[in-house]
Amino acid sequence: MNNKIDRREFVRHGIGAAGAASLLGGSVFGHETATGSKTDPLRSKLKLKPLGSDFLKRLPRIMALANVPGAAVAYVENGKITWHGDYGVMNASTREPVTADTVWQPASLGKPVFAYGVMKLVEAGKFDLDKPLTDYVPGEMIKDEPRVAQVTARRALSHTTGLQNWRFQAGDTLRLAFDPGARWQYSGEGIYYVQRAVEEVTGKGLEEFMQETVFRPLGMTSSSYYWRPDYEKRLVTMHDAAGNVAPDFISQNTPKVAAGAKKPVETWRHADQESYQAANEKRFPPFPTFFVINAAGTLKATIDDYAKIVAAVLSPLAKTGLSEKFVTEMLKPQIRINDYVSWGLGWGLQTTESSTCFWHWGEGTNYRTFVMGDRASGRGVVIFTNARNGRKIWERTLLESTGEDQPLTWWL
Image (cartoon, rainbow, N blue to C red; front, side, top):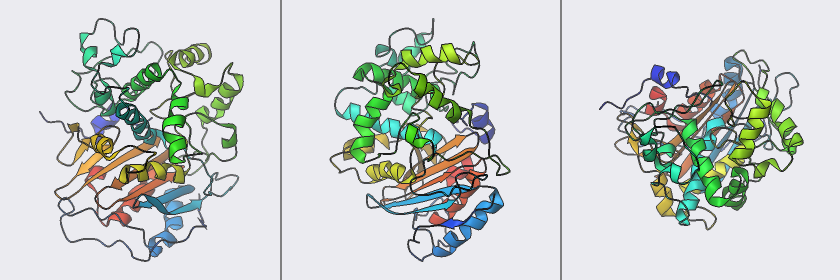
């Protein structure tokens, strides 16, 4: 079977959704610039390395040309954040500068963070990756569909359930496009179903669980899957392809959700979110999209906070994180997409003849983010932007850091 999915197929399955700049603060780490290699990039060892000072000086101009008002980059080595840089502005109209305290919306980069939390449950012997999710979640997933017994957390975290990405319109129902495990198809619905299972196992809302299991132990103090009052002046504004401020309906409305809730939003489980959705947002199906807490796409974090999860995957010996055994399990290919791209548990994987790295991208309507880590070298890079054209920034930054085009960008 040919498991390769091209870009048009990628877009068809709904995988997305999910001005001038100035150099601000931050010291330059290292002075070596990434140089192109004459070797075949598919057979050369990944050389993820610090960005050179020349590129960092040019980055504001590159952002301006791409209509990307704000960006942040963090670099991890040997389990530590060794550098981060903040560039441009949070809002192209008001011109508030991006700082280390700026909170971003990483979008789908929240999926591997959630997977990390799931693996902590697995490590503790409280969750089984291969048990049918219907054994955890009461009620029918899909009526009169026996194949749902094959939908497991392992398949959901590796996007092989066969479920659609999202139910986007009222009246949409869950459905299976193929036998679970047969091939890869990106599915936020699958991730959310694991969220429901975790809530059933722990008896807690997802936010409670993630704060206790991942965020606080790793020191991710600014991270949350729901809107917090302190985000009001820290959260970046979204920008369209022209670099103009774009409406962010979800961020505008989630504060109202939190203010009007009868109990703390962080304690909400599926029934609470479904009830809110049905009462307040009738354009969509009665399930939580991104108005409240969704493991597949509502994560908010500073660049340093996200770099901490990357560091925990690169150096899994810390008492507060996953052990080597379970990090290795996360990064084990579960499904091969083409000769170079496969998927693990929460992470995309790129494998060449001499290296394997983990990665993920985030894509909202008007923002783009990216992360890559290489366990062989212990290095990782995180790139956040606040504009629709942000992919141009993360691709250029990745090229500078590796010195070569990467196969994942050809596929993505």
